[in-house]
Length: 620
Image (cartoon, rainbow, N blue to C red):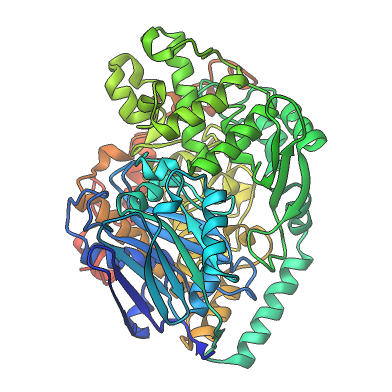
């Protein structure tokens, strides 16, 4: 097969009329946004009509790779699925760790733009140069693992398959896109796929990935891989994955518990011990060749929640079904997260909306006819799998909860709103800004909503003292920044977001920023791959440009500075737990922090990028 260079091809697919087309992308036009979510946002802004319903046939579903989507790159097994979120009405990006992005590039496609609605349940097949939309009615109603197995059997060997489950078919706003039990989980891109009658994508690429400077590329890759191997964090990721930090998160006040009434439950060590004593089996990578392998193979060996071996059991999913609901039943948590994968649901939003329901039951806000005998009591793990199924199928109480906490609270009335912890409609994950207040700002201002990792886990800087090599680019030494300080954090948050967005533009795993790789390493790899003579400073400017473009998209879709508000509960002194008497951990003046952030960004007092800022970034 022919060698495939980055920036070669954009694939357009219209499911409505069955047309497909390829066109060459100009490297000069790609460079300002680099690739990945940068290119995807540029396409979405330019080509999707303002105010369009994300579930309308004309809405775009964008599958994006980047210049470092490559198995040789540490973290290079990444794919970005982008569009307008049906959950938030805002910009949506969701990274998927998988070999599918590599397969897409080997098929000669760097970015796929899908629009229209198929008349029948369909699957899109990308098989090197062959593009086909096939009937997939036989897949309806299947779990994701069964769906992928049936399609693989039909198509033959060598395909990487992305699919949605029943939740996506039923347009649950936080439905995920799955590849095996790896998820593009947040923001509801599974519902966008479902709205298009697209049940699966199958990708097979057998080309090779060409480089502008093969010798320079080989040298840059050897250096990057050596740095990762030598870094002390790498074996810790392999040993414990994301779950390794759970006891520390609990102890440091980074463990939102009982629907965010506290930032520490005191149960983190117990959950961790149960997980590693009973459920964990081995470390795996989310793509072939990952040198860190932070993924987990887990199971429930016996009992009422017996669950087969599968990829899962990461920190966020386990926390969502234990700490969020104030429980310690890891058997139930593993089973619930497994079912989320099989039905195609975001585990974070699913656990969060169940915790919200438990609090509403406690406050008498749920009608008994909705509860239908469910034991919605704090810590009751036995109810979790039943509710996951009900949410995926939109049955009974599950119909209400499938809307997410914002819309569910609006239906229940004013008394429920205080318990709905979200930003822009996206439920909060299992990290608490009362551990490090940079996270408060990034939660409020992140373009896709209340997310810890898109674009950056900011508490890693002020709480965990990770500099990411950014002190040379305007950030203070994190050792000099107290996690509970608020002054000066606007500029730090902006710079960290610009940096974090780059990984989504490169289409690489963000965890390698914890494992020794710095901006100069990425600049060297990108230069060798594309022929662009980029510097670390140019990359940071590109990160700022893409963050600002996403902001402009959100403003165009009707979001305002009010949508940067942080929930009151998350700003307050915890009502119980280790930090319940610690006034300093509360967010004292979020409005001042937000104003400082706007100023650092070059935005006006209403959070709108000024004309001078747009001009400086080439967005005027």
